Length: 316
Image (cartoon, rainbow, N blue to C red; front, side):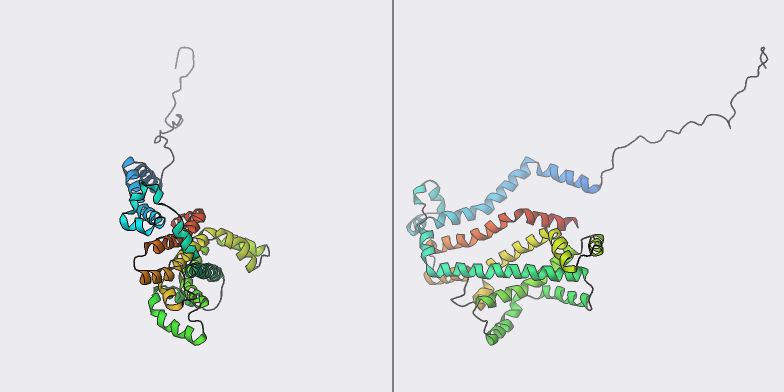
């Protein structure tokens, strides 16, 4: 008690003010291991040593193509007298006479047309049938769906060499042996298992809620497939189309067996030219480059969709 008659009260332990306990210091957003690995990879690729190595690898891959192009524009005498690199110091050796002579050859021109007639319909049929089958296996319920899909997956391990002789006998019996249609049907049959497997797995990654919302809005299965699934699956479809076109365009084994002289593609025609004229570089070099430039144009035309398909497949 103080002299003024007041009582000084001290705060008890119960009524004392509760002070906040200091917590751990605030931290920024936690970065996952994937982002850290991506930053390490970007730093590695930005290294000048790695970039130099990549440029060296690119030059190694481009050098044969450049040599083929230069050899195709030189005369037979120039190609016999020295290597293709001598044209770099003497550009007067280069001309388009070999290409003019090649295109005037009726056999090569017909073979180039047959290659287009084989590659384009095969690619369209494989992509169209695989897209329909992939959607059915992914989102439609029907009896035996899983069993049929397992059969399709099992066909992936069947090598193409096993079916050459039986299919050749079958095509001979039905009159398709030695025709463009027979070559197309063979490529379609052996290209479908992988195409169906690829597109089915891609379509299965589409959110189910999106398809159910479309069905609740009254959309039919065909409308959902054409207006929703196909636009979403464009990267995978473009990747499949590029691979299928390249496989068929560069094929020689199937065409060598199933095509005759009137339906042979460019690869078989060049092989016959090599057999007849030996090392006739004036015919083989421009023909080989002509056979190479079309797949390059197709690849660079669909490069953006191809990269999108590869990236989408790596994320899923």
